[in-house]
Amino acid sequence: MKKALLWIIVLFFAILTVGCQATKTYYLGAGVERSARLPVAEAGQSAMRWQDDYVIVDFDLTRETTSLTVAGTLDFTDYSRIMYVWASYLKVQIFFLDVDGKVVDYAEILPQRGRDVSKKHKFNLSVPQNVAFSSVSFGYETTFVDDEGSGSMVKAWPTVGQ
Image (cartoon, rainbow, N blue to C red):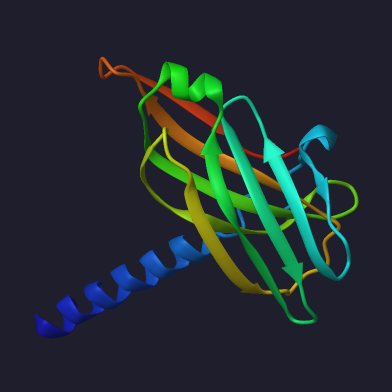
């Protein structure tokens, strides 16, 4: 009985681990529209801004030989501030793109949790530079909540299978 329970526990954690690893590859190869791409210098620091109808990301990207640092702020557009008071379970990722605008790597820049739309939110990410890339883009998903408690889901992700 104990042996069977041990095998069930081991199998459960093995499936859980494999499932988590598989999610890291989901966006690899996905396409990003040219208008959403920001070209990046091959070395040094670049100050940039990415924006859509709901969010604004101002950031510095520093490329070194083996590492990469992305630091900045996520802010919400005037439209978001007028219409909503809260971004519930906001998830934001940076996407590293090849010359064709295909995702070659990505990382989460803000932990998934609620955010006050009236405030700026700082982030700082340091990761190994494992792949060659020529531009970056951002993606996010959230449910915006208005002052009456109604929610509107908004997401902007690269196109998988493009």
